[in-house]
Image 1: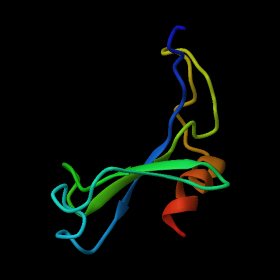
Image 2 (image 1 turned 135 degrees about the vertical axis):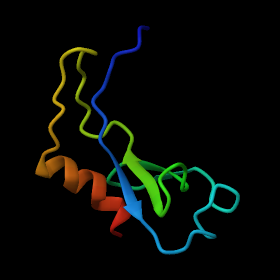
Image 3 (image 1 turned 90 degrees about the horizontal axis):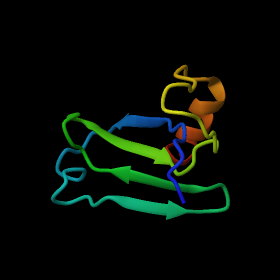
Length: 85
């Protein structure tokens, strides 16, 4: 089928251990639990930060030209849920 654009909200979270979160020592990860599937990337271009997001976020299909660009409280809660565990 055709690819359908989907709204995705990602977050960059601070860490305090550059050697532990460098690409050479911290791989890309995918973790699933009863709430959803989350993925993350090691520090890359954003020093002191790692990227974390939820696959499908809120499952909001959209068009490339029309989608909500505003971040809501629900977006933040969903995005931060796993990172704050």
